[in-house]
Image (cartoon, rainbow, N blue to C red; front, side, top):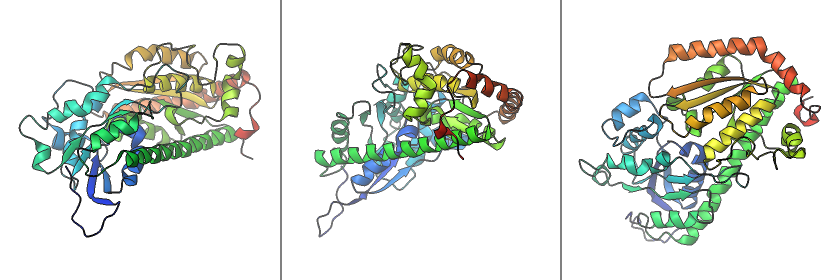
Length: 382
């Protein structure tokens, strides 16, 4: 247990607790929660590992992987190994069972991939088999079960996990910290969606095409997604990510209103018309992002990213492609991504896609506009 630093005064601050969190998998979509959560508990600092890289994996994770899995899961070994060399005494590696999702209420569940959820315990084993690497460095390892999809249960699971590591923590403090975490996550989400709407308004006003990325949140990690999105930005194409698309009622009604009126869906966030097995959070949002991208005129190309051996993604490739291409929107896929970045071939593919964007975007924009009501005045910047 991490003891309180000897002091002559009682105080809420726990500045002696130094928390390390791996920048891995679903932490990419929930990091603001964890920062605000631990700050609310008064810890001294919160340290995240660096972005995934081949060097990180070779230096800190080699020989620590105890199972065969996709690279995003195996890369956790490098993140944990790196944090063992930081000034921390509490290593928190959340087992995220379910995720917060803007589709909650319109899908069956918002679960995480099972391999992703179990990664903290599986990779941990690689740091114990030849001796306890955590104990050697005076670091307490905690992997709390995290049901973001059931916020009423979350404080209980976090309290149970942390009370064995932080002396004098109370359930009431954890409840308040969870509230602060969700507040920070909502604020980050709001700002990200505002920026996406700003991009769409720019495209509308200037009649310019944009690219939509359909992937998992951790593909924003340069070491996992290989910065393919950045390659398009360098060529002058605005990039939108599916998980931060704008959700204004007027915009969704413009894009999906006809489908709701004709009874094909019950709400603009409903995906039951194209995907009935709506249990996986990331999958659900990718499917909805495909629907959004197929309708918004200025999204003229959708790029799908997927990692090697991703069993969760496999069943979605064909449905997503059909949804996108049914509207005449161009669809391209970078599949089987792993730790090796083939820079040359990625650049060639990006330049080829850019050629198609240049050749066909205006025709796609015009065709999609004809199928929609007049453009809402909120989209045009005067």
